[in-house]
Amino acid sequence: MGNQTSRAIEKTRERRIKPKKHIRRHSTATVGCTPLSISRPSSPHSFRNQDWLDSLTGSFSSSYTNSTDHDPTAAAAANTINTIASISSIISTASSSKASSSTSTSISLSKTTASRLFGASQSKPTSPVSIHCTPHDPRELDRLQRQHYLLKLARKTNCWAPCPPQCATVLDIGTGNGIWAFEMAAEYRDAKVIGLDLLPPTTQLGCPKNLYYIQSDIHQLPWPIESNSVDRIHQRDMGQMIQGKQWAGVLQEMFRVLKPSGTIELVESDLWYHNPGPMQQTFHGYLESYYSTLGLDVNYIQTLEKWIVQAGFGPPEVRTLDLPIGEWSKDGELKQFGFIHRETQKAWLKNKKSFHVTRWNITSEEYDCAVKEVLDEWDAYQSFSRYYCWVATKPTRMNI
Image (cartoon, rainbow, N blue to C red; front, side, top):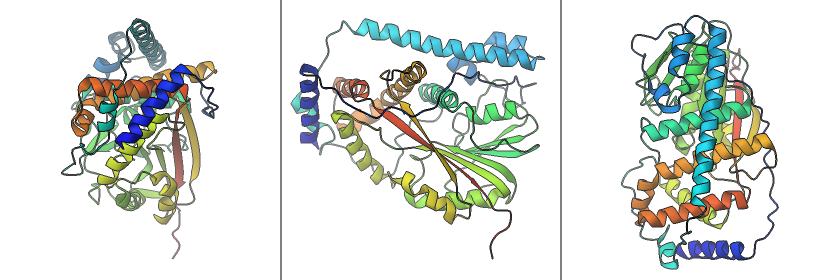
């Protein structure tokens, strides 16, 4: 793969000397800057009254906490203002950073360095350890926070499935930093929201009383949840956590805990970028090889609908959402979302730097140069990520 990387870099250099017009499919995302509606929790729960949301994003400011205790309308307005301010701060910071770096001299990867990337010098994993950072890594929490709000703004909601029934039990599989479960619990006060994760969040400020966490490995079946006890199940971004052979069991377990006529909503994305440049294609080749060592199915998207039906659910409703990576879109809203999406993907590469440098056996500067090539290609080739959403219902009566 070293020769492939060298050719990718040479093509990149040729493109800079003699630019070509790349005709690429534009994003089909339906977007809109609808206000984020998180009602102020009435009071913090005894063992969940922590402050990680406030310290990471600033979306829940001290003024919001102090002035909206008894006014849900003011709480929603304050949250909207704080969220927009947070996003504006992100854009302003990155724009100034981009301007300051434009005068610096660019560094190109040498052929010797490129030939070692993705080559035989990679260290082999001794066990199927995930490529992800520790869930409680503050940098990764911050990235997941921004990614959550990006998806919420693009979808104009936290879920495409029907609203939970009154007094429903909602289960969030692989809850991660807990932000989705937090917002659902705040919005649906009469519901019982449960976040299930191997390492659920240990700190949350103003956590609603109807939000609970269960520490459990979703790969270990059965889950500590009673059969036919859940009305709604939500799962997002677990494609890099569930092995190909485990998907059938996980979906069957969802079917077991879900009530008849209950609904599941799965939101997953392709494990690669669409319209990749030469260097990004080389990254894809490396990641595909590495994912295979972990037992992950890089094409799980194509078979997920079949697994859902085989688990017993009715035919799912499927939606797609394309999000641009970078500011190449001519649409104002897509340009804004493309900027934020680029920053979250850039943060992903930065957060995984130590892992990749060790595995590729390259220097920190060499990795930074490879990443810079990828960042340039996102705009040049109009790259985008594609998300999929499956909504399926458990039949009221089972066929005998």
